[in-house]
Image (tube, rainbow, N blue to C red; front, side):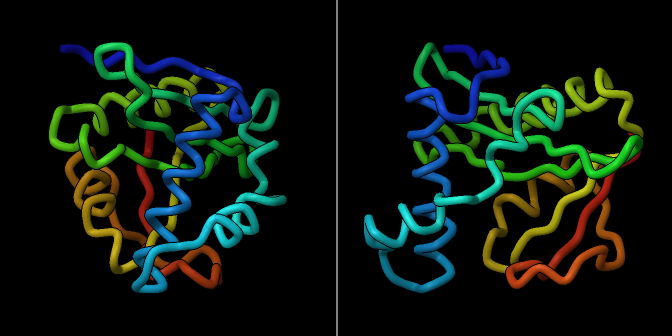
Length: 158
């Protein structure tokens, strides 16, 4: 069983499915209960995913043995900085190395855009994500935004 990671339109059927699963998990954790279909639909409406496509960004899908298992988005903030967003590995595929390959793919895409630094924000309860970032060289940095869900900020120089 192996992982492959490749760019894919954020609105392709499999990418849209991964984005729904991502939002379901983060919303359910935040609220402490399962998110409803209506809440997931509302969260995905006008969520800025359209910026995760050239020339403003990229969306990657990871497949494990051909099955869609992960995704991540890259959004250009300025000529030297990009933001990492919507990083998700389906629970069934965690601890198989897919998260690290996904980050490597995002970093490669960022370099192709001429980006020198990637940054992101995340929440306290997303401990798996924080562990993944730290393991792959992302360091906690001072807050660079005031997002309502931002509790930890990370960056990595490329």
